Length: 378
Image (cartoon, rainbow, N blue to C red; front, top):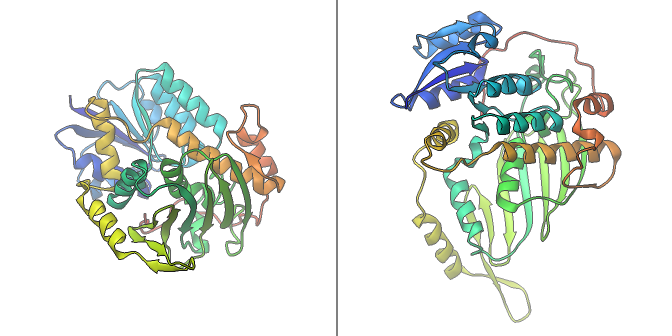
C-alpha cells in the first residue's frame, strides 16, 4: 500500500518530516500541506519541489480518502484538538513533541486513538541515533550491572529573539519553557533507558530571556526504584551539549559513546581496567547500526509499523510518560516539594488551566512576530 500524507503546519520542523517522507517515495506520497499562513505553506512546497494541495484549514483534509498519514507540526497547544479530529476519521497521526500542553489533553489523544483504527505516535527522533540504540541494547542486556546514578545535560542556546515568535514564551500557547520544549528529548530518553521514575524534586528559573513568561533553566533530582538521576536544562549554554553520563556497577558510560572502567587496588583506590574497556568497546562496535537517523528513521519505523513489519518504537503512551515527568517537574518547582509518580488522575496539575494559573510568569511577553527567519537546530 502507498500512503497519502498531509503535513499540518509549515514551520521549520515540517522540513524534517517532508525529508523523511521523500526518502520513502515508493511507500508514501505527500498530498497536502496546511498552514494558516498560506504563503508559508506554498514556499515550503516550492522549496521541496512538491506539487501538492495547499490549504489554510486542516478541516478541509479530514474527509480526504487519499490521505492516510498526518504529520502534526503545530505549536503544542494545538496538538490535542487537531490530532483528535484526524483520529476520529481514522487517519494515522505522527505528532511532534511535546505530545500536548497538558496531561489531560494527552489522555484525550490516547483515548481517541484507542477508539479509532489508526496509529498514533509522538516524535522522539533522538531515540533513532546510532549510539543511543546501541547503548539501549547494552543496558537492556544488564551487561554493565546495576545502574546507580545518571547525569543528564540538556544544554541549548537560544537568544532572546527566539521568543518573539507569536506562540513561544507563554504558558498558554507554548505550555512551558526549555523543560517542556527542549529537554523533552532527553526526558524521553531517560525514561526509555532507565525506566519509570518514582519521585522528582525540581526548581525552575528564567535568567536571560526577558520576552518570555516561562523558564530558561531548570534543575531536577529524579529518583528511580534503584538509582537516582540529575537533569540539568538550560537555554543559556553556548556549548550546547546534550549528554548522558551513566554510572553502573561495572562501568561508567556516556552518550555520545564513551566508557571508563576501574578496578580497585588493595587500599580501595582505583586503577584503570583497560582490558574490560576493550571488551565493552568491542561489544559496542559489533552491534548493528541503523542506516538512517532522526526524523527519517522514525518515519520509516512508523510506516513499517503500519505495514506490520516491525513494532512501533515510540508510542502515544511513551509521549504521555515524558510529559508526565515534565508536569511533575513544574508541579515540584511551583509547590517547592517532592512530587511522587505516577501522578493521580485527579491531580490538579493534570490540567492546562492549573498550569496557566499557577506557574510563575518570570517576565511579560511584550514582543511578537508571526514568523522568524532562518532554520532550526536539532
